[in-house]
Length: 273
Image (cartoon, rainbow, N blue to C red; front, side, top):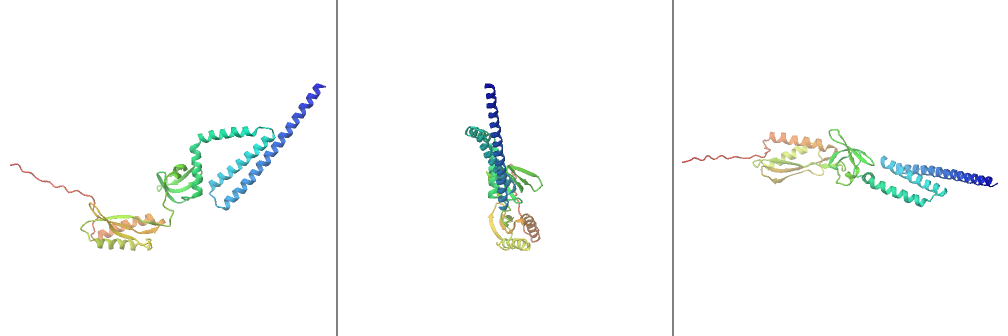
């Protein structure tokens, strides 16, 4: 009779454990499904706000994982596990992982900041982290740029966001800054007129703001003019190169010299008595 009672007790315990395990599995499954539904709702919300794809994927994934973890804790608590101890273990493990991956997490945080605050967007020409190029991708961990000679540069986001960012494409217009030197014997009024003539001859140079041409410096070997016309950002380099060439051609045609550093050597002959 005693063996039979023990067997019944064992069967009841096994049956209760099986029922509890089944219920815990169902709880976790329902929680996992709810996590997926909420993650999809978050994704739709981000899509409506035109959030960048990498950040969108990151937020949706974190949301799904966090809610799935909550569902797992509820299921384990139903089975009688001490979830407080488990949370402590997970927190300690998370801290250790965070310390080990601090550089990676720094890149993630910087990537989120770059995507949210948008100091630049894809297609902009940017100088950051000691390199320059056209931005082709802004990821969670790294960003990619393409140089003028078609090289691809991958830069960790923490190096970009932690330093100075120069965005040459942020504004619709840019100013071309040139310093043009002429000889001290040249007619300065004529030089100014020729420079303005070269500027006005190029239809890509904007009338407003008005270009600036003025004597800036009396240097060691030349009188230096500043030449500062405004152009659309997309035309900056092609107009700059063309303008420099036209100034040289115009100066040659009108006999204006472009001096270069030179040194005069005087030789004195000493005669002995």
